[in-house]
Image (cartoon, rainbow, N blue to C red):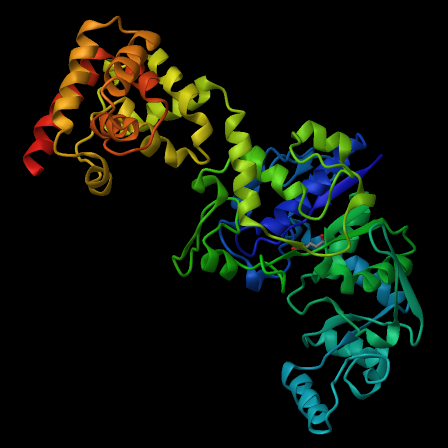
Length: 508
Ligand code: GLU
C-alpha cells in the first residue's frame, strides 16, 4: 500500500514550489491507489507563523489536491501536527543514545561561537563531527556518568547524531539514481533540542516510520539531509522509504530558485492564495485572487519539471493521475514562464461553459449597478458565448463586455481623430435610416449598409464602420459590427448613434 505525505512547515504562505510537491505526491498516491497525508512540521517554534497552517489547508483545497488523512481531517495515524506529537519523540532520541548512535551535548551557544571563531582565525570551518566532538562538552568526552549528573542537575542539553567516521552513505533516489556521500562531509546534526522538541530530522524520520510512509517525494533542497535520514533509518533498524527529490522551480531567467521577490519584480504571484503577513502587514498576491482557475494552475505546475513523454499539454487532474510517471521527472530545475501560465489560464477559461462565464458577468454587472432586471439571464449567456475567447482573466470580463450593457459615456479620442471625419454625421444618420427601414437581420442590414450605401457611394468602409463602432462601443474594438447591433438591439443602437452624432459633431 502506497502512503505518501506532504509535510510543510507553517512558517508562512505556501510557495508554488511547495504546491507542486504536494501535487506530485497526490498524483503518485492516486495513481497507485494509495493514501495521501497532510502532516504539519512545526517543531521549530521560533519560525511558527499564525495562520500559515490554515492557509496551507485552504490553498490545497482550492486546487483540488485532496487528502485521505491529515491535520485537518484526522485519521488512524494521528495526531498529524508534530507539536501535538511532542511526547513521543524523546524515547526515540534516548533509544539512539542507548544504542551508541547519538550522544548528549552541553555546549553553550557562546562556546560553539568561540569554536567557530577559533577555526575561522586559522581559515578553517568548524564542523561538529567525529574529528571535533572530542574537544567539545558532550557525553562522549565527559563520560556518561557526568552527562547524567548534569542532566539531573537541570543543565540544558541537546542530542546529536553520531556519524560513523569515513563511511559512504548512499541515497537511492527515484529521480537521480544513487547519490553517495561520505560521512566525513556531514556534521553531527542536532536531533533533539534543549526545549524538549525534536528537530526536523528526528521528527521527520520517526513520523514517516510510524505513519508507515512508503515514498518520500519532496524538494531538492532536502537532498543534502537525505544521507542523515538514511543513516537514521539504519540506526533505528527501520526500512527506509523510497526517495524522490524534485527539481527546483527557477526564476524566469533560469538563474536560481524562484523567490517571492521575482514575483514582485515581474508581477506574477508566487503563492496560491493572497497572503497577509501577520507581522509586517505586507500583502503578497495569490493565483486565486488574480483570477487564475485552479485547474489551470494545477496543469501548469504539473508540467514544471515533468512531462508525459508526448506533446500533450492540456491535462485534467484525472488525466494527470493516469499519465504521471516519476521516471519522467526532470533532474534539472524548471524555469517559471509567465506567458505559459497565462496561456494555460486562457485555455482553461475557454473550457468554462457560457453559463459559468455568464454567472461571472452577472456578478460584475451587479457590482456596477447595471440594472440587473433590465437584461435577461439569456442575454448574459449570449454575450458570454460571444466574448469568451477574448478573455483570459475574469477581471477582464467587464472591460471587454460592458458595452453590451451600457452605452459608452466617452469616445476614445485617438479613434475619433482617426475615423470621425466632418461628414460622418451624415453617414451615421444614414445608418439610423437604414436600421429604421430594413428588416432587422444580418443579411438585410449588411446589404443595405455595406453594399447599397457604402460601396455604392464609394465611401471608405473602414472609416464608416469604425465610426459606427465608436458610436456603439466608444472605441474601435469588439466583435463583428452587425452581430453586435443585432445583439444590443435596434432601439439601443439608434440611441447610441444619435448620441454620438450630437456629441461628436460639437467637437468637430
Ligand atoms: N518540513 C519540511 C518542509 O517544510 C518537509 C521536508 C520533507 O518533506 O521531508 O519542506
